[in-house]
Length: 154
Length: 280
Length: 106
Image (tube, rainbow over all chains, first blue to last red; front, side, top):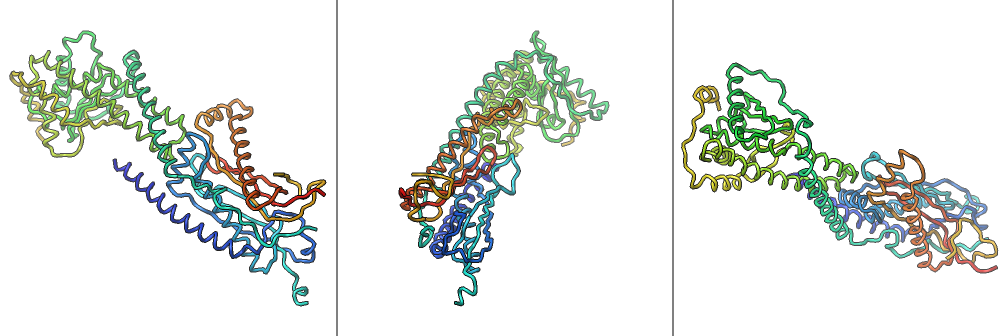
């Protein structure tokens, strides 16, 4: 009986806090994305002519996001029946956009105009194979192109 | 070379993060899992109770209590209990052999049947009955468990359940916990019906042995009056690993119904036994 | 919608770059498939169930990529890259991203 209560308590706590954190994260993501929209992020490898004289720097952004208890249980249920694991999709979407934003923020500090050749790396950390997802790390990296100093002065 | 856009695109939300009704999905899946587990438990229960009695008794693993120090008095008590068990079974020619083990210095009143035809009786049990009839009822209850092969059935059921969880492959996830709770609830229902059978047939054994069933309720009354919320644990189990929690009051009601309209004299417990077991 | 992992498409010109678009999905196979996969790990051979799972996921990820590209008015996605990661036991994520562009016949 007490096991059931603990389970329900964890589930409810996980659901409420997870939802609250997720909504808050999305609000922050949307606001920062709007602010950084001018800083282009492209998977393109070859820079455009207008950037041919720029300096290039590797920029990265990474984030580790944890699941909540509700998501873990929902996903383990999905694992029995198969199908799309909706609970994890928003998690990965958040992680990827957050990583991109952090990469953009780094590029902005460098005064970059654009980020080329953006790539992503996703990995699971914190839990062993037998268990569900513990947390997920997303790394975004690319090359930021900055207008050369002498050029800017000119 | 190529015209670049003014800014990063803003595709609509909800393509890579569809916020489908996560909660409804969760409830649906949890319900389906529970239904699946209950159905599987029911099937396991059915096949275990079919198969259990068909397994040769000699195949049952012999689960006996650990070696313990028995004084002269303890040995005498054990002998007496075995004699009582034999007397209860005297009219049952097909009965499987039963061995009673005495567990001294155990204050909680308990008796349990294990596979291999072993019954363990704790010293605390003597404090909760007033007559031989009351003791015989508890003993008869465990004897019926063994005659009905309940320990073997339970063992098969538990095996079936562990296989089920293995197949579902989620022993330590939340879903695994949910499945196991469902399975345990099903097991509990099964063991409840076993307890009811054991009570019914034990009363019959008492009737055959003493000619009446007066005194059969002594142990249950004592458990209730203990005002202890601990549930009764006279259970067919694997070395006490498994304890069902049948409703004592319900069981008592059944037993009282059988005693009603029944009259007879209580057989007292031997005086030497009482003097030795008086410590609470 | 044209999807390619080249930077340019022969016979077409890129009229306009639209920026990055992405599609991702997480999927799990049901228990039956997982058990079959367990058996296969003993005998070897192709895990048809998982091949199917991953290609279904890839289709869905591509479809989401296309959805994003269509929504921002592109008619092709170039330089497309796939990445697969095992997110939890029995569940994996497919992520695909590329550059949305407007192509025109040269």
